[in-house]
Length: 219
Image (cartoon, rainbow, N blue to C red; front, side, top):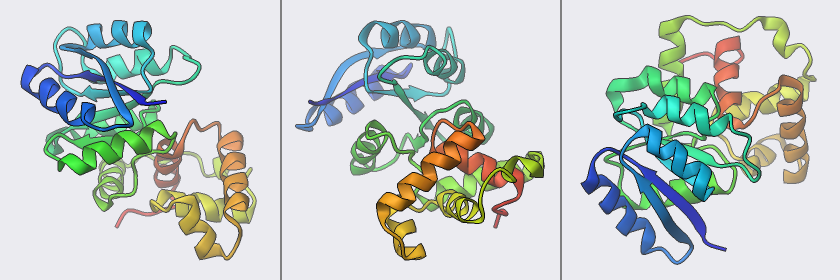
């Protein structure tokens, strides 16, 4: 089954360019687009795409509010949201991650990064591996000086805290397994338990919590 994508951006050329690039992939199908946030929400509800590429700044309803509406709708299977952004709106990116967006992509990213991002997000993972993403979350957390109560992490075992820290540093399950000298399935189990205990939707929220709680320090 092809990965279905909805593109939401107020620039027609961006929608057309991204649509042509993604549509040329054998495993990706662009099933719709939207010029504003309000239309994006309506189209997401109608089409139920696997992934929504969501520009942050759009008329009618901005991308952040549109993402909130889509992510809170409780679609099953879930609709993943990948935010499209630039460096001048870091706070919006941070908020998007806290509400459950699967990550973000710079609008001027190379074509292969866009294709990879859609595949990563469709698979249920967060787009967190690039160093710039981790630095962005760290910088925003530092500026806001937000700290979740330390007891929030007390429900975790020492191994689960260790796994959460490695997730927050952008490691995949395979990389964590190699680091800890355990099976990848064991890591998956730990990650699932961390999410359940901390009521986290995905790795993006896990990264934010790890920085806010002080488990991982910016730098």
